[in-house]
Amino acid sequence: MSRALAILKDVFGYHAFRGRQAEIIDHVAEGGDCLVLMPTGGGKSLCYQIPALLRQRAGHGTGIVVSPLIALMQDQVAALSEAGVRAAVLNSTLSGAEASAVERDLLAGRLEILYVAPERLMTPRFQDLLERTRIGVFAIDEAHCVSQWGHDFRPEYIQLSVLHERFPQVPRIALTATADSVTREEIVERLALQDARVFISSFDRPNIRYRIVEKDNARQQLLTFIKAEHLAADGTHDSGIVYCLSRKKVEDTASYLSSQGLNALAYHAGMDAGVRQHHQARFREEEGVIMVATIAFGMGIDKPDVRFVAHLDLPKSMEGYYQETGRAGRDGLPANAWMAYGLGDVVQQKRMIDESEADDAHKRVSSAKLDALLGLCETAGCRRVRILAYFDEASEPCGNCDTCLEPPATWDGTREAQMALSCVYRTAQASRVHFGATHMVDVLRGNASEKIRQWGHDKVSTFGIGADRSVSEWHAIFRQLIAHGLLVIDHGGHGALLLGESARAVLKGETQITLRRQASKPAKSGERTARGTGTRTDHTAGMDEDALANWEALRKWRTETAREHGVPAYVIFHDATLAELARSAPDSLTAMAEVPGIGAAKLERYGDAILEALASV
Ligand code: ADP
Ligand code: ZN
Image 1 (cartoon, helix red, strand yellow):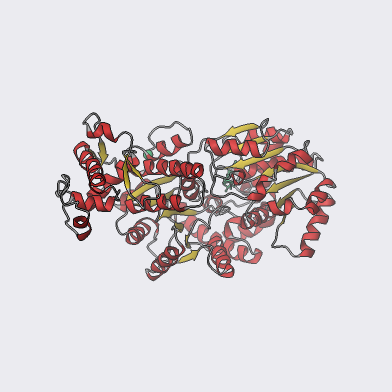
Image 2 (cartoon, rainbow, N blue to C red):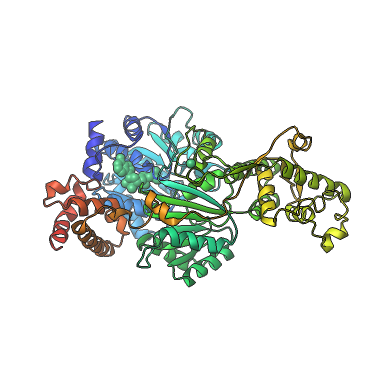
């Protein structure tokens, strides 16, 4: 293990392993197979990079890393090269000549780590190449891509089981941040990892603050949120991602934010590929860009300093929500996950499931996954407890989510629930057709519209009995009844509501219903900042004037260096490393080597320039 620690220090500049990293590295370096489940930002890369280096140096051969995303591979290889590792990438972006050069290096044993796209790996040509090469380890990153139920399914991943058949003596490490048990079992089965050890880390991301607000005017709410928590006094703002369901909404939202003076870009699969890539590159390389995107923008974003992820539409599942929000705060510093959610979202997602071409079994799974997410949105308890429970992890209320910070008031909604359920029952009985929530609210509030009169719903006994509550209050009630399973959205019925199994007991007065009162006013932002929510000033918190001046000088140096090397700034040094340099202002290379994030290669490459930058302040 001491050799692994030496590499951690020397190459990566870190002083200690995190969580289960040491165990995992030990296991793989010894030649064992394993499956690693670790949240985004948990430190998965080192779990295969260090064993790859250890095994390569022990003469076992090159570590081969299978990774589905080109941008991710390039970032990783750039970062490894910066750290002095002989790493390369083989994917479709290389010219024929460049690819041949990489292949020659591989055959000659000159590479320590090679990143390969799955479709490239499975070509007969590359398989032949592997037969003639010494291979130390196979790492399969984003292993959940083998899951057909999942959102990132990649058909080429299914074939990766061939690796085990052809190279049984080479250890394999599969890694993912998707942790639900169904996906886990699928990975084990499809990659033939039955005998592999499974390492499960806690999925908690304590630095992320979860918040789910009731949708009112979502764009306006988003703007208020960004301004309150992520905008600095000088008009610059943090990097963030805003997810929307449709391409049109992505474009509209991006132009809206831009019109409000924010640096926002759009990203979706329907855009011109060149523009899309340009936007992605700007997001990666510049500071303070807000990417408004569909989920086409996602996997492989390992920008460490994304300070917020916002959802303007409901994701499809808890896995989706957790993975998307997990892109915030990979550097471990405070970050926000913010979502606006309303009744329309539920109806829209249900409809998308119904109208999809999937078979019934798949639709049932999708529906159950959506229900779990609704439960999260409507819970009056801690959001984090709820999320972690979904991933089979028990926890205590976190103190860093909206419901912990401002516990929602609850109220006895039994009477209202009875009104709503009975309205669903009566109207369906009167017209033999089921209707959606909007119609129910009209009936309950006694709104004698043409549609209502046409169906005779102004004659049912529930007409007008809920006139004392507003439309939005009723929407909140219906959402919660759906989330509790008392009402079910009909398959194929365009949002039509049916009574759930447990509705009868409520109608008979046998069950009490406690509902969550919606927070009417957003909490003051000043209070949040005081608690340490992500703002761009975090790195400089507590710095004195000297340190601040150092920080500015170092940032300037880093921007220039990153531009010269054609890599994002964080590939040179993370903000946290830069801040530590600014604070401690080392006056020698020996002192600098103690700063976390500075390994031997970086010390040699940049040490003098940093001393110079610090001296010039
Ligand atoms: P994942 O792939 O699991 O999302 P990464 O491998 O990208 O996470 O690691 C997340 C961040 O944590 C990176 O910036 C990485 O350099 C840092 N990191 C990982 N392990 C350690 C460690 N032992 N000590 C300090 N920083 C670490
Ligand atoms: Zn909480």
